[in-house]
Amino acid sequence: MERVNVGIIGCGRISDLHARGYLGNAGARIVAVCDAARERAEQKAREWGAERAYTEWARLLADARVDAVDIITPQRCHEEMALAALGAGKHVSVQKPMTVSLASADRMVAAAERSSKVFKLCENYLFYPPLMLAKRLIDEGRIGEPTSMRIKFISGQGGWTVPDSAWAWRAEEHRRGFGMQTFDHGHHMWSVAYHLLGELERVSAWIDSVDGKIDCPAVIMWKYRGGPRFGVCDYSHCTALEIPTDYYANDEWFEVTGSKGFVQVVRCTGRINQGPAVRLFSEGRWCDLPEVESDWASGFRGATDNFVDAITGRAGPVFTAREGREILKIDLAIQASARLRKEVELASFTDPAPSDGGAPQSEAS
Image 1: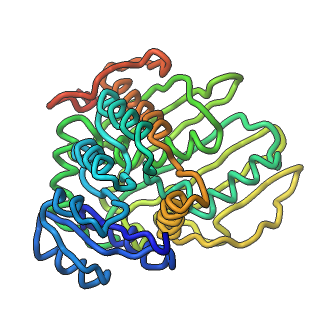
Image 2: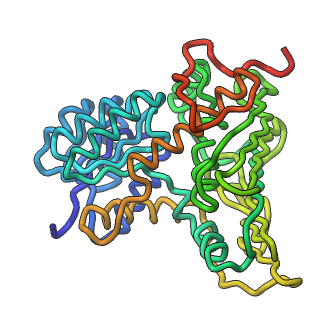
């Protein structure tokens, strides 16, 4: 295959970063786009040099020129589109989270494993260079045996313009019990926790809201499988704080502590913390580290490059459908823990997705 011909389904705000990845890859080109809004589909086709703009995703899947599809739509749409794409003989990348229930994920996993095509869950944080460097340092033993992980998430005002339509579907997901921050954005956090330190055993969560719309503040804790190893994520929403960022109005930082030191990634989506993006304290001193790119968009370049490399046989997909299901299970278990107000064991968790009105009960209620 000389070049992978990509079709993008869903031309919302985040699609610009996916498209930038394909446009910067000599082994790929965007040949078709689809969005329910015709004007937006046609505009993105012009911007990205695509030959065709569709308003019906089934027509894009019927386009013989399309080798692979990148599905960037609301989570509840993923299963139908992904199964149809595999059935049409397309390679598939699905935006996280992969779907909204474990039963739905099981159907997607089964279809992906029956297919000869690549199925990949797109998780850009795993390709964010500072987090990639942190993983390498951990794997090399620079902090000794890891024992704990801390994640800080903070959101506020500012950032890039997000269309009202994008907020509308997220608000609907929140009403159904899938929080904008702890479920949708949370997938990034739990993916990083899983990728850096391994499988989770149990979770416990408290999720509230300061405005009735955004599921913050929240505190999520987890225990890793085997040995004394724990993690905690603190979510805060600051209604009057301007976040310095080129993207969404939030930022995150991460810290993993081990037996002989700790490593920090001090920024991600935003630019609250300045200076080197990765810091390592080991054996009693701060260590010099190579400079790495810390623009959040670089993770999307890595994720799209991985999709193209998987299709052409140069790499395996990160994440697979089965790994995506594992992160979804963590995501759903966290929502269930907050809703039921109890610790949830992942090995026995089979709770279906929350129904309408199933959002976590406020701690203040």
